[in-house]
Image (cartoon, rainbow, N blue to C red; front, side, top):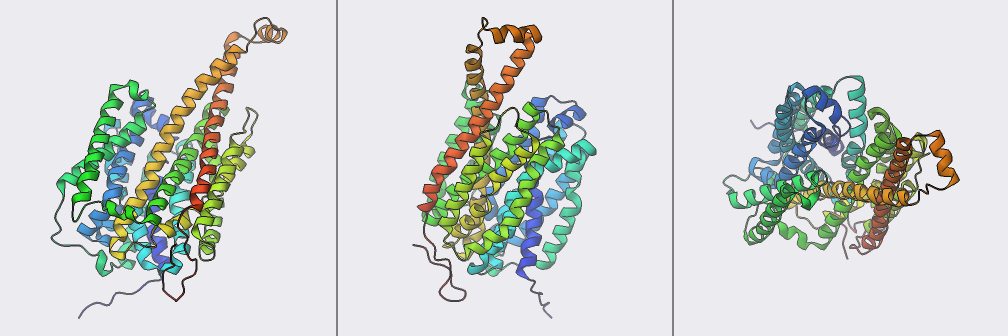
Length: 505
């Protein structure tokens, strides 16, 4: 007798699959403030320890766009459970690592396993809810995508300062086991998401995409450290990435059943939403990375305090997500996206007006303003992106869409880090030119302080001005994207009939 599968509340399913994805997204930023501790324990240099982050991001970036194809091969539920199980085991191995090469190896495995969690989570939610309720459902998944990168440095800093860095990885184990059990019990694959037996493997397309994206991620992550195109190392990976990705695009467009269906970009709503999410990723990850570095390097904060600058912003997002989810059913997505971009631009502009006297409370307020617009960006843009995507392509589309945010984050961090270094040099040169050795103020200062101290203060001021410039550039970019948001397709917020999808003009 055939066993009858119990049907669970879709909201419970959304929470369970989001828990698994939250665990993975958290690990993209949780090690950022702990690298010096890890390097010291494993006897590695600070430069070598950055591969702990790079290895994870490279592996994650390779799997993300391929996860839709892998879900078709294995079946969506089976692939999702496989990712959870492997991610949990890899986290356990990372916590037990006794050398840097061992930790990097297990971080690669962790990144490969975790790369399938974000897009498959979104695909499961898409099928669990009817179109008119997807906006509210994305409020739950949005907490995963937006809050996890914000809380990562805070949690990582607290654990590192009060316990040991190994617990950054070991804490994933109970969460992973619980998520695995609940997914096995609650999630059911619809017919279109079951394994497609006999589907051929496109080894050429797979190789081109994996090598191209992996090389691109290495180039972005190591570019500033290696002085970009002054380094043969970066030139090599840039050439490999460009060649492989160009060939991959040409190859995939010719295939009848490609591993990544680039024809999805023919849908204007999806293509514009992808670009907007790319920009959101650049802003979200860029801000989450720059602010802790700023307060630690220039204001003397420890890892825990630097993380606490970001935490209240994550709490604010959690409360705003349900509001944004409800507004999606009442206001056209493009107007909400324009509002979100405008609020983010204001937050970045306020942060750009920092001074050497800015205190902890002001930094917390600045970060809250930075993330205030994110709920009004993620939910409506995600809703608009999938309006025209057929169910049988939901896994593939989710994978491509998830890649936009992560790729945007990598580009945003790389560009902002380089910009800060160069602007710091510009401001240092400008300030040094205005030090007049003949002035009374200079002579009085020399009498009270050493030249070394004066130089340190000038360097401190130049660095703060460089960070300020970076946030100002981010503010102008977000403000320009308000116009782009208003040019996105117009969707009718309410469906004309129950169950009908909103129309797009």
